[in-house]
Length: 494
Ligand SMILES: Cc1ncc(COP(=O)(O)O)c(C=O)c1O
Image (tube, rainbow, N blue to C red; front, side, top):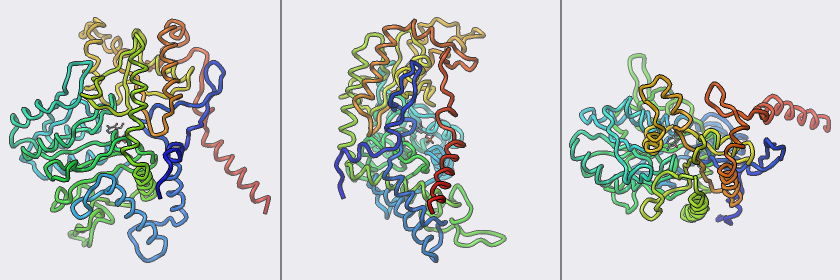
C-alpha cells in the first residue's frame, strides 16, 4: 500500500511536545536535533508493540511465538538489505549494539584480522569519532584524507588527494572509512566514486551511512557494477526514526566468510564440545552471538519499509527544500557564519547545518534558543573534533590565545564549537522560522541575553533565574504512578 505524503510526514511521536519557557510562555517544541537522534515513527513503533503480544526469544521453530518472532526478525534483516538494494545471495545484514559504533569497532577488528599485511586505513577528516577511533585502535596506522576547498568552506573528500594517498601507500591500504554525509555540515561524499578508486588499489570501503540513510537514497552500487559497490555500510537505527533499535551493517558475505566471527556465544555455533566448537556457516546467525534486540530490529525494519513507501527520492527532495530555506535564512543574516562549502551544486549537502554567531559563544546561543524560542539544537564539536577544529581554524587564530599558556584551553573552550540545526522528515517551515527568529533576536540584543546567563563550573550557560530541571518535565516515577492509577481505575470498572 502506498501512502499520502502527509500521512507519512506527521506520523511521529513528539511533534506536539510543549514546554514552558523562560518568559512564561508555553509553546510547541521545535525539534532541530535530528542528526543526533530522529523522533520515533509512530507506525514503526506500533508494529513493534504488536509484536510484543507474541514476544518470545528467537532461535526456535517449535512454539508459535518463537516462530513468529523469528519470522519478524528475518523480515527486519530483509528490509535492511532491500533498503540499500543489496543482493541477499551475496550480502548479509546484521544487527548489533545500540548504534553503529559497535559495528564499526567490529568491522575494524575483522578487516584488520583478514589482511594483517595491509596496515594502513584511510579515514576522512570529516568523520565522527565512531568512524575514526575504532580504526586507530584496531586496524593499524590511520592516515586522514583531506577535503576539498579551504577552511572554513571545506567541501567533500578530495578525490585527487585520495588517489595520491592510495598511490603513496600502494599495497598497504586495507580499507577506507568514510561517511556518506557529515554529521557536522551535512556535506555528502561521492562514496561510489571513492569505492571505484579504492578498488583499483585493492582497498575496501566501509561507509558510515548514519547521517544519510534517512535522507538520501543509498544503493550499495550506483550502477550495478561491483567496482562501484560499497563493501560495507553501517548505520544507527535511532537516526532512522526507530529509537531503541540496534545498529545495522550490510556487507559482502565474502568479507566475513572463512574467518571466525569477532564475537562468540550462543546462536552462532552448530556444535560445542568441551574441547572445541564449530561456528555455523549460516548468515546472519554467525554474526549475531547472543540474544539480539529483535523488537528494536523489527521497529527499524518497519521504519525502513515506511521510508521506502514514502519514496526516498521524494523524501530527499522535500528535505532539500527545507535545507535551502534554512541556508538562505542564515546566510542573509550579517553576523551568522555557516560552515562548509555553501555552493550546493559543487558540494551537495543534507539537512544538517553548523553555524556560529559573531561574538556569541555556541553554548549561549544554544541555551537561548532553547529557553526563549523552544528550539532544540545541539552545540559543541559533535564528536568530530578534528573536523570542527579545522573548520574553525581561522577564527581560533584570531582569538590570539597563547597556546602555551596554562589557561589556553579554558580561553579557547567557549569558542571551540558550533551550533548545529538538523532536519528530519517532520521538519516544518515554522520550525525553521523559529530558529531564524531566535538567531535574529540574539544578533540584535546580544548583551541583553548574555546578562541573563552565567557560566557554571562545567562551562555550561545557565539562566540566572529560570530553571527547568528534567524531573519537573518528565519523571519516570510519576509516569509510573499515572500508569498504576489507570490500572486501578480500570480494575474498579470491572
Ligand atoms: C556520522 C555518524 N557516525 C557515527 C555516529 C555514532 O552513532 P552511534 O552513537 O549511534 O553509535 C554518529 C552519531 O552521531 C554519526 O553522526
